[in-house]
Length: 159
Image 1 (tube, rainbow, N blue to C red):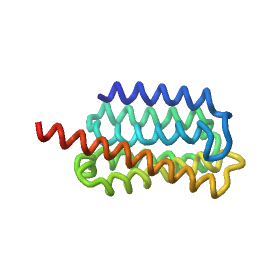
Image 2 (tube, rainbow, N blue to C red; image 1 turned 180 degrees about the horizontal axis):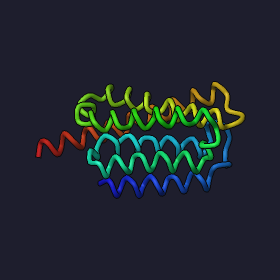
Image 3 (cartoon, rainbow, N blue to C red; image 1 turned 180 degrees about the vertical axis):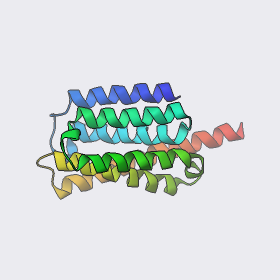
C-alpha cells in the first residue's frame, strides 16, 4: 500500500511540475494537483504506521519543498517542520482518526495550512477569493475521498 501511495504521489508531483503555469489563481492545475497530493499524503500518513512509511512521508515532504524551491525562503522551514510534525501525529493516531469523519477532516486541514501558507507566500497573484475557492475544492475532494474510504472500511469489516 505504501509503495502504491508513494508512486501516486510521485506521479502527481510530476503533473504539478508539468502543469505549473497553466491556469490562474485557485483554478490552476497547480492548486488542483496540490490538493490531490495533500489528500494522498494524508491518507498515506493515516494508513502507513511503519518506520519505512514514516520515512516515505518525510521524503515526500522534502521532495515537495525542494522541487518548489521553498528551501531558499526562511519562512518555508517552519511550515515544513509543522507539516511533517502534524503528519507524524496523524500517522500515530490514524486508526482513531479514521473512525470519525470530522476528526480526520480537521486533522487534514490543520496539516494543510502550513503547506498552503508556504505555497501561497511563494506564489504571486493569488487573492483571497482564490484561497476560498481552493479551500472549498479541497474540502469537497477530501470529503468525497474520505466518504469512500469509510464505506470501503465498513464493507471490509462486514465481510
